Length: 432
Image (spheres, rainbow, N blue to C red):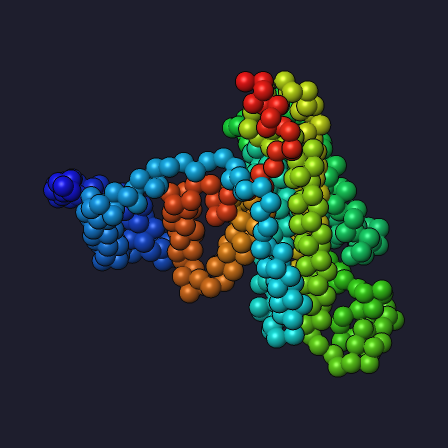
């Protein structure tokens, strides 16, 4: 006999709908119901009523659905934590190699068909991929919550701008030097926070990010303050990408004898940035399988157990901060070259929050997840320009849904299992 079907509790569903409506009124009321006009404001009760009604109806229907057998099964699937590392069977062969080869082929062909707007959006996405990969080492692998990561991003960008202004450094010389400067800043930040955890660590790193921004904003004689600093266009072996070269130089299209293309600068930045992203992906992939990567994960899971096993937690933390910061320095150089101008407004706390959201949504420690999340969170705002007033609200809804649906992120960390060597199982059985 089949089990009796439990009758639906309509009263509880109505209560849930009313509570959801009150919460929607509190959230949407100040945002949607009040429209500022100069020094005054107008109320829009109709818009608020429609939104609250939609929320109440949706919550009522969802509450009834969750009482059905299918809904109960779905609710139980959300209750499973799904935490930890996903272990693949020994000898598992991933298909990512084919996907990566296909993506490289698409990336090579892409600039031929892309216009300037699409090219700049993809460049911005790749820059955030670099930032996400760097912060993923600090937060996702080492478990160190860093809310001031944008400071290293700013160091890289201003390293190129100020290096050109005071030392005559160009794109190619600033690229490694900015990464080294950001790595040193990460090492300097790492020392004071060695004994800090959780909220205390987050507050200190947040303060570090604000200190860097305020220094850039207030040191007018050196950084230009709010006015910012102009950044030189990158060159290729001294050849410039403009229609006319400056200071007696030679434009690249005249040197090679092809027609001038106004997108050449962005194509060059895209090509170099893509190669750097591939190099960082490879280095991070190797590091996660080396002892230092295992040490980061051990530190993330339990610092006391990590130290009891003889690992030097000081060096483990400093290595995470240093390598993660150097990646942000590289991203800062590309951002400055892409934009042609830098000022402190590009390096606010919201940028740190966005990069952290990329890591969380992609999956803590997951490389592929970070790459996907970086493009989602940079391309989506461009697609939602018609909803500019609600972009932040939609971003918050996306975060809430992700934390309910996929609390471990889009893609969990996976490790390939190890096949026991011959004779090992016999020894284990004999010991029993």
